[in-house]
Image (cartoon, rainbow, N blue to C red):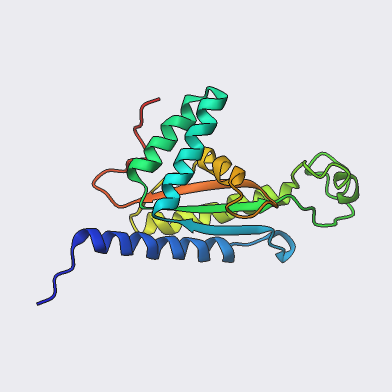
Length: 180
């Protein structure tokens, strides 16, 4: 008789859902069919490193939200999905959604995001977390751990806007009802 321990099953399920989240984000619609995004799954010791960096940022910036999220991820996340985007215009002759009349003008300010980059990222993140929700995997979108992942260049140095989505399968979602 084979017995599968709940802890093994839970970890396998969380990782399987994380993989499906990546696919959902990848296949989400992108402006002009151009993807400037990258995605990764963080597990094991790398979650500790991500939490350490998040805490470090919180202490450096005197921002308790970062230290709170670092502890929350360290203590509860079984996996973290990272989704980020490059800042790259789409070469449009007229758009002005970013505040510039066209992409050529915007490209003179390479650190200002293209509206489509952030819009595509939001759609991809929404698609990813809907998979987690449909699978009853606890999650929360966190910019704090995304900033830490960006500083660590976990998606690569070209990815300037990054969000992290910690995942857990527990009796209560540990990423909500947190202390301020």
